[in-house]
Image (cartoon, rainbow, N blue to C red; front, side, top):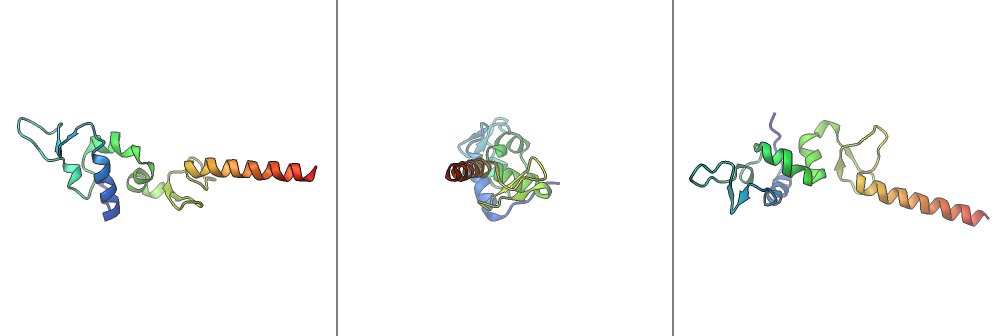
Length: 116
């Protein structure tokens, strides 16, 4: 099944297409057989380029999760972004998880020092 994108997802993919090593001046180097060919991923609302899906899309974890792993996704409690949880207890995306861990450690140390 080829995932279809919403307009905001399409715009994010269009920005990512420029990071592809096969993208040059709006054309796809992989499909170039002597005459230039427009990059299909830059004009489509679905993920049709296998190279883009495997190599470029993982650069944006939230977008990758939204397009490829829709049934496994969770919403972060802090930022509201979508992510793929590594366990069934995960509440935060990887970025927010580190911030929350630091915040909880800071609060725990403050409570401990205040009680002395």
